[in-house]
Image (cartoon, rainbow, N blue to C red; front, top):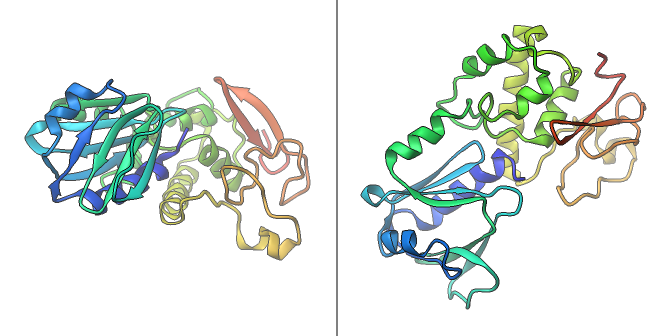
Length: 269
């Protein structure tokens, strides 16, 4: 599932390419046809992301809400547009570019009140300027649930996924099984600030890189990581491989149906 930085990249891209002018909106697949006809030909006023949610604003006509889920993707191209290929839920055509959306969990036209209700259910997003990290801390510091589970709970913290979760805990030496209420307040502030920096870098580069300069392949002589997710990471999807810091094999387990990775030595229980 795409993490928050991907949605913020899409919001910036769509705002740059489509905002301020009328756009053509259609649903070649047909599942979004009625809603698409409501905003077709209307001015695309802007785009924003909150956590893993993307919002296309059309003023009084409403807001298109997209949640990509596990399989959703946008494909971006310059005009002229070509005939739809596959199951295109929504096609957006602007002055210079067009984009097709396929396979989202959600693609729906909402009122302003409905958009506000979605945002109200989410925790603070490290990539938003209006984020209030103290809201997340209030939940974490009073919970017996593991820090690893809390960081993936979108009602606690919005936009953080499996990669950022694993990497930020490693970078701060926190055992994933540590109960939230046992986390130090100063350490939480450091984790939050690190998430802000890492995720902003992800927005800029389009990949997740969490490894310090001294542990990069060109410094240590190891082979670069080869993975469809891209980026240099410490523990994510490196189960059984040596820790880049201490050499201990990276551990793996399942937590709430998601894969969890950590170093038993660098992140002692």
